Length: 535
Image 1: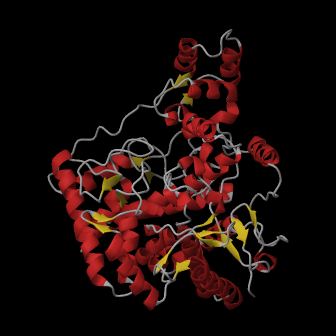
Image 2: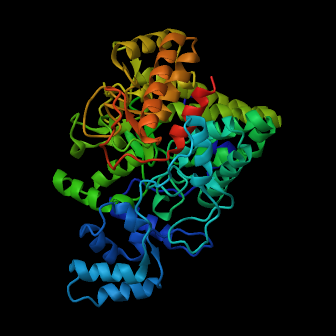
Image 3: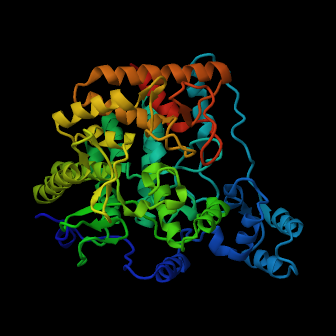
């Protein structure tokens, strides 16, 4: 019972499987899956018109690679490819622009044009929900995956449904009584699991090779607060299917210090999870940036795995993933056992166990309860740094903790993985190193990456505050809450906007910097802020 291998015999697995072969073979398999005839979309734009796509992105026609990634073809794919193949000079920027102009509808480039009509935050957010709501798009809208129900987008450059963002957005929808919209979004995620075997990072085809932190069980729990415990059994099939996506390969014979997709067999034979991506190529939405990073690093294509794995984590990018603290060229996300991911999967196992219990299936309830217990045991063994008094990521390749504190460690408190003694020590660590004038800082390292100091993000404020409260540690929780709310209010009073991230170290009204400009809108900031203001 000290591993997960026998669960699949009882319950079965459900997702595409891959072997640990060469990178080329993995890409071949992925593209074969993409090419299967289906009633659902699977093809990414860099698969449909690869040569044109590469030429346009590397020519930097658009400042943001996501612009062309989201472009909608208005001519057939054959005509688009023929137009490019007929160019004598396929690097001629003006001719590439002409092809783009005549063959694509380009999305509007905008941080967000919405101007508040309200002087209070709650009124501003209430008026934002309709602006951020997308009704069902037409199925021919480029690479956007059609969903059955309306949903909330994050805002700014993000005009699609993003996975882990949505849980924190739902916190605010709950406060505002938008329960039907929460229901719609949960149904959309269930639909994606049913269609694709997992929830992609967003509802675009170029996200299909990766997911994001698996927060679906938390969304189900949130909806159950409003509609009763029958919600757990209603979505049990999708929660189970998502679990097996993350645990794919657990029934295969693996040697210690070996990884398969999102699972890793540790030195001691135990299994934990990592972030991963099933495609080895530059990300479609960051194509030029990824190619440049690979060239600058002088690494082979394996760097794309680590870049994409960081994107699956939602932390793109952070010194959490770097070998050398401030050098993104040394990114090695796939070698890290993340404390946040494994804490979330512990919660997923516990929620599935609860759902089976509600169904009266005590045998399967016990299977998942025991696996949650063993995961908790492993998290404490691998990720608790007793010397520091804090939870950290684990380097499975080197068989040691990374020694890089971040707010990801607070997931262990949020999901009650920590003991009371560990929680008290973690709180002491926070108070000493990570509570700043504007809230809790993401990491202790000040780099040019947006998931490092000096930035603070709404979801991590929520995880940290609630994690502390789970153990009755109120004083630092209230301190973080009050400082973050004050910073957000001050920014709103000056600019009339709620943005994606804030400079919490300096309590600065300017949080520019990172992978892309600070975005306005912003779904998870709205949600967390409303939940905290409700107090």
